[in-house]
Amino acid sequence: MRIIYPVNKRLITGRAHDVLIIRTCYALAESGLDVVLIIGKTKPDGEILSYYGLKPHKNLSIIQLPVVRKTGRFGISWHFVFNRFCLKKILELLSDGKESLLYLSELKMSLFLLRHKKRINIPFFYEIHGLYALYPDDENYPCAYTEEGKVFSLSDRLITTTESLKKIIKETYPGAKDISVVPLAAEKASAFKSARGGGFKVYYIGQLYYEQGIDLLMKAARKVENVQFHIIGGKKEEVLSYREAAARENIENRFFFHGFVKPSEIDEAVKEADCFVIPSREKGKMNYVAHTKSYEYLRYGKPVVSFRLDSVLEVLKDNYNALLAEKDNSDSLAECIRKLENDEELRNKLSAGALKTLEEFSWSERAEKLKKVFNVN
Image: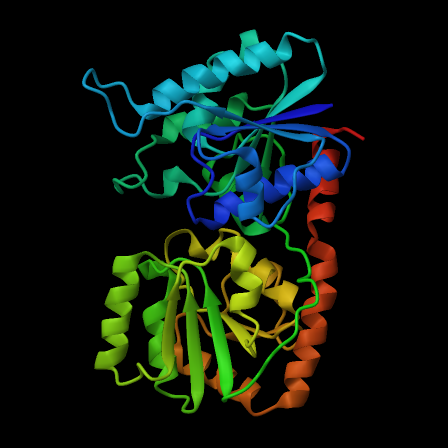
């Protein structure tokens, strides 16, 4: 069986979704399937895999197609150009007669390819990571409700990464087909050792836009003295803005911004962590979307502190692998951090729970769950 996964983007963008794409493809390849990942022209294949800490695999091939950066003078977008090249490449691949399926996770790409479903003539599997229908007036979500519904109805199978999202899809699109839930994953960090020193250290990894709640974490920081906060990720302008905010709040000596760190270098960057934090607001997609952090943090065998978001509760369990604070409540967040700081026995208990939980969410487990959805061995 061959899995063809077209992605209308360059793969190295610094987003968590990139990690999901490459690691899922790699896990499927390791499980014995032939995987063809189609992306926009980025870098040599070896450099892409190395960027994510991976080596070439005989079952994984990466096809890089031309893209244009901006809309052309005649209104032809780079999406249109890439999609046309992608359709041509898929048809070329299928000309050998090998049993194949399409694995998709982008709405516009899926909508384009579904218009040619009869020509392609293989099963379409669409993995949903958010709902455009929930944001009809938001210019950041330009795809119409009807287009989303069309993709849902024409795809052969729908996949989500959380039960929370599945529930909302069923409520929003009562006619949607059966939906399979396949959670995200992470792999235990190899030989990870904490080099603790200089006080209790709380780490955050991810983007810094408003919904991620870094300002709420800053409010919590004012309530817990002698605790350091290390923030990994974010755009330069966001980092600068938050550094200025930390200075205004007189916590700049305990709030450190490290900027973007390549996935292959994250383990080294967080080696002194005592716990990790998810301060995301109950706003927009944050309550139902799969939080990559929920899984990635577990791989270090460290306690996690998070707000009680519905999707987070599918992975993190209070007093087992995490301490959970009341939604959007910086006082509650601070209390959880303080509790961990002062209770080594609790930290050890949650650390053990984190590693135990991780066994359920390995990349190999994700590959096996997808294979069941694909109905392949």
